[in-house]
Image (cartoon, rainbow, N blue to C red; front, side, top):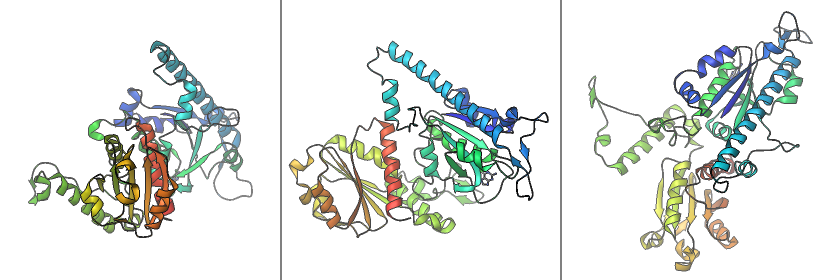
Length: 403
Ligand code: 6GU
């Protein structure tokens, strides 16, 4: 991930981004942080970039032209760096014999980057401002899919509206309060996004299971000693029974969310993943499940016991069906799920290897499921694709539930 930050205070950005995990990430080449000093584009001898507001009132406004020049300079650097990277990769492709790796054009298609009218990649230009949607984990994950981001930090009362209209693609706030400038917002955004860049976190700092991912706060954590200031570690954590521990953690997460952030609970789902058919389906099911939620269960719907017993899912539950190749040959779909019911509001998603039969959709709708969508299941190894699908399912689940 490459960041290009347009700011009046580049030192502030370099300070923050040069420290701790982010500093290490940049040194190791997983992220790059570039600053563009807006003041360098001042048209005045005084090097000022602000002026009085038309219409009067308190405070100063940043002039459009220096901001415009700074953003253009950032975009140009981004284009050059992208080109250099693509050349580097093309060289690596040639050395690898060409065939094993994806050529540049295909790679862009795969990563889902948006192109502008001239066919170039449209770089997102993000203006940090309190007059915007507040950054959340879903937005962070979405931004993390970009290769580069241009961030624009304002000061004084704001920036001339016309240059924003002409250059900005996204407006982001970091909370409902007012800061003196956008730099801290930019740093917060870059910190949160960088955690999703492969290589930035080491295994023991892993971001795979996250507070927020399920719209639940995290369960409490404990380390040695077993007793501290007379307070004991909850005994269940010492049992070694992983099933029980997971259940306890889930209960703790729900209780804590209920107490501290009840507003989040309405956006949380319990995920049930049912797979059937081949072993591949199991692998994919577990991989996808883990990217959507850290809780819930994965069940093997090849098993007669499950097929025979009544299974009713409620309205804050999400069903993920992962159907392996040829599974319907053994047991027809309607037969396999004859005891499965939704509540009328239960959400469902089908990942199918074969054709996505209308009949199955109708069957699930009749059973009280609201179908979010279907997708072809792919290779569990293709993490980028799996990540994208998981994000898509989560977003659609929240959207369809009308939250
Ligand atoms: Cl991103 N910038 C400023 N100046 N104030 C804020 C903010 C950003 N987010 C919340 N308040």
